[in-house]
Image (spheres, rainbow, N blue to C red):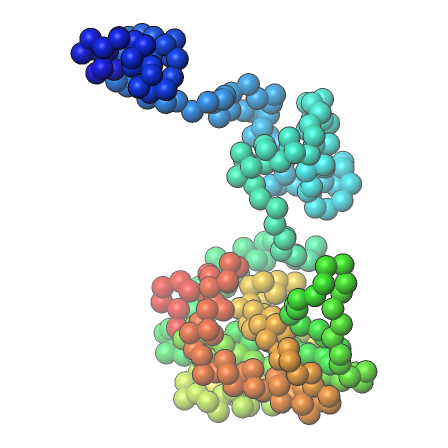
Length: 328
């Protein structure tokens, strides 16, 4: 606009900027009305939220319904939300019909993304989980701290010869084939981890029962010169008469605490199990039970030398509660 202010001809300015004379006239009018700021470019199209078919209140209601309920809980089919089902819900509530891409735009605006859901047993008691978080766990932590003891979370896991772990590349439309032995065998392990990065484990080939549990407990207490508070699930072997009798004879060395029923997500050692199954060698498949047990031991030995990885298990979404300040 400085060129026009200086007295240059409109046609000359239009030629200089390679625009029409009409465009120069529009610039001049806007400059006279609002100055330099009036010439700044503005984003085109509707403003966010403008001319939407559903009101803000209706959108908020649908968003909350998707977060709080399953489709079957609202009279639709299935347990998982899809764009089509959300479209059905909108039509059911407000008689407004959307295409799937149209529903997708709303989902993006609402900050919702397509995710793999966590699984929860329908038998899980929400009140028991609340009590664990707010009362039981803080009490265990406080006792262990007062006794200068050690808190560990433990769990058992089984790995099978016919389990295919990981992924591989292959031609589109053709599923890759992994060659493995046709024999079926398995190996089992029990492990225990602490927030300090300690890991203790035992690999065995027999079925997990009370005798195996006692053997693991005996080995575990041998590694500590202070009392151990061991947190486990409610497996029948953990609560058996044999284990209770063993614990009575070692009450100054170790004490068992039980997680709420059907709540594996509260146990960070479950993440060790998942890591084991992902990390079994991809280039070599065990040909017999002894090789499978050896592969399993190698995994645990490797993790024992990686305390930072062990500590990382406690950073999982549902087990971060264990990292509260003051955890022993």
